[in-house]
Length: 443
Image (cartoon, rainbow, N blue to C red; front, side, top):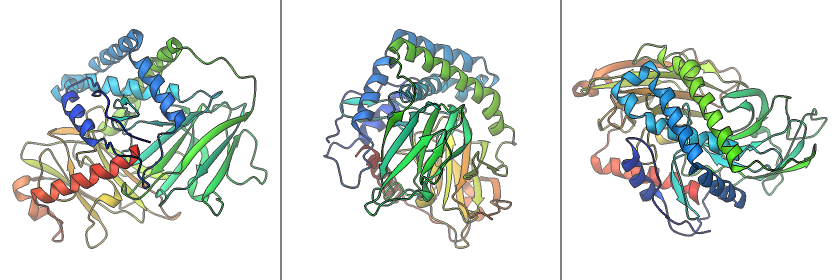
């Protein structure tokens, strides 16, 4: 497998020029490395090609413009930074929805890598896809499920496993169902291979079984990487083994219409349901985390609003979690560029304090702290924090130790004595390592 550059990725919005340059500089051109993730299956390539074809359709592009109008009607759009990011938000949500529709054909199931940074591979330029705090540390792979059919997933563990993997069922793009399978319980053969059955019947003694519900629409596999450089999701394939007669594949026009319909629903869901959760707590505070559907982790959301000479210092207790992730998003919770910026930090990318807590510094410009969450010049934006893979009796009552706004000039006085600081050259090395570790997703 060889990775090719192709033409520049086309983005909408104020970030376009920056993202094009960053995307192209991130893409390796060497042959597949043994440490890669094997996401570029033949099924994936075909799904990507069709999504790019549909994205160019006039009706799809008109739908993107309609999404922009929805954003502009929201009161948040009165803020300059939020207004400027609307074209990008509409474009990336629309492409996220398109990936979801393309990858959710239950009669011809295939796993599609969805919702990640822009990248070029196999002669294709895949644009940015994101929605509502997509986790930069997750490899999302989705497939369609017909609750009246039966499926078999074949997989094989590769190298070091993800810190957590979840086979989750969804009734829509924004609504997860409690049913699913914890990847940590999957029974594997000596060579790392495994098989998962998926149907509406109980397990009845079958290992690795997922029982779907009547309202199941698709399955999303989340492979959580606390360390991008070493952890690797399993290789996955899926086949339909039984069910009602197979229907004709949908036309490009039908897929385009469904994608825009989904993107419209997702946009309204964010503006009316999920967005208010991020903006309900006062700015520069961190609310207590709440449990995820299915009980597999905890999440909290919020927003910051800082002056040009200020930083937000946040200290968290991992509470025994194998993974803690802290991610920044724009006003609409669209991920900031995270391949070449430390706008997100996973457990394996931070330096903890001696007492086991982790202190982060959110700032628009580099404060020289290793655990810098790069706001990329933004004075106000959103954030999400996740704790995952915890002990059954874990308590997150004190997971948020503190959050305070401080002057950049006084930063040292407000940080632990053992805080790790970096020079400009050390920061460049940190970013280079980050970019190289993300590029494993393309190998």
